[in-house]
Length: 210
Image (spheres, one colour):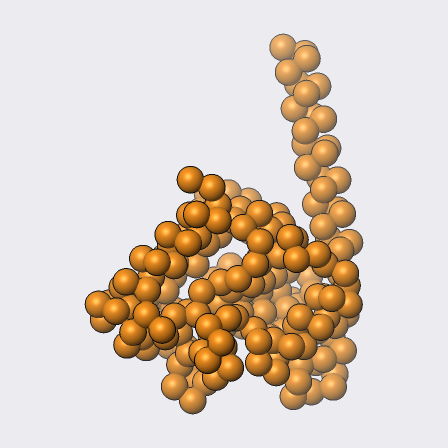
């Protein structure tokens, strides 16, 4: 089964759980807002939860904050095949409130499976809730725009925390920081590629010496 098929199966199971009342916030399959993007993406953007427009269109990041995110993605010239967009919670909380710890925990296996299927080179967290999955006990104001290597699922994972685009819409300064952090992504991807090439070369040298 390829990655696209695995993701489709994952979301089908999620919708079935929603229809059976096994998930918080969800009353039917139509409440689910799955991730969207290339199944072979290098970059995984993780937000917080769907808003009103996302719940209507059943797509992540299509409201005001989503338009800003996608505008900057185009600005830094990322190709559609390079990224995937999702949320830690796949259903809109009432009145767009923050997701509760219980809701985040309920959807955690879904996000974990998304990451395992996609195996992205870089995870970009949008806002403090998705950041907390990988970086706890830190303030986003202290770490945004700084690349972190973390151990997730017994593997090393690169994480780039950023402000949520909704926060960028509320503050000119935050928007400037958000755009500046997004502009780092192409350079980070180049650096990660160099790291992979170095590791491959080291492995070949080691094998030749055996």
